Each structure stands twice: as structure tokens, then as C-alpha cells.
Length: 164
Image (cartoon, rainbow, N blue to C red; front, side, top):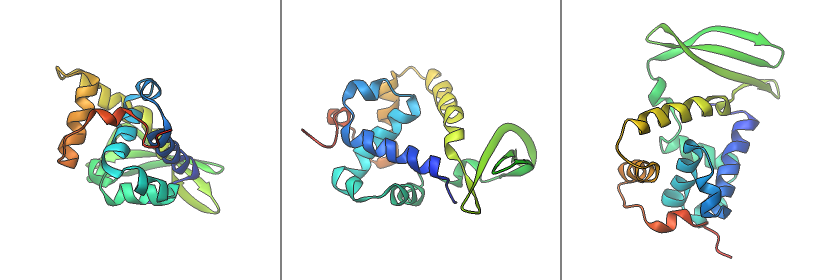
């Protein structure tokens, strides 16, 4: 998967937030951003996170299955509309049309996927799922992190990884 520069900048901003953002800053983020920051703090940690470039972080998240094809395994692209250096491709699920679109950007002569275009949809989907539970948002995120990592979430997950 080739990600565009906007996607890499997004993951770099989440890395920076994990390293430096205080609790209130994280609480003011979208659900998907809160989950990302807390995942980095919970699973990756300060030392490794500081060593990773934005591209290495992205590759690491793909390798860990945090970003990947699981949700689109039976999917494909339908009609693609190209306008200059951007394109939008219809997402197909089991060969059927869906409401979802993938956005592509041509950078350095190569078409790359803009995952940031999907963030509002992912956030909305997660929020709809969360609203069906009887958990608080914090508990929902903690439960997700614990299930994926196999280790308990501690209260320090709200604190920046870099201490002043």
C-alpha cells in the first residue's frame, strides 16, 4: 500500500500527540484520533516512537495489522474518476457498490492512497458502534486497546510520553 504525503503527515501528527499532548488536548480529539494516540502510548512507547520516521511508523502500523486490508478483504474498486492529479474510486464489497469512496493522489508520478479522506467515515462508524454499547468512550477505547494488545491499560495512557 502506497500512502500519500497527507496520510504520512497525519500519522506523524498522531505520533507527536502521543509524545507531547496533555490529557485535555487528547480528550478534545475525534474518537479515532484518541484511539490512535492512546494506542501509540499503550503499545509502542516513547523510545520506539521517537526512533520511527513517519514512513516507518506507517509501515509498522500496517505490519501490526492496525492499518490494513482486513476490513476490505472482499472489496475492490469500481468506477474511478480522475481529475488531474486526484482520483476517486468507488469501493465495491463482494462486487456490489457501496457508499464509500477511496481517494488517490498522484505524487511524483505515482498514484498513492489518501487514507486521511477515510478518517471521518472511520470515526463515524466507530462512534456509531460505540453508541450501541453501555460503555463510556474512555472505557470503550480502553477495552479495544486491551483486546488488541492483550495487556491492561493504565491511567498514565492520558499523559504525554515525553515528560517535561
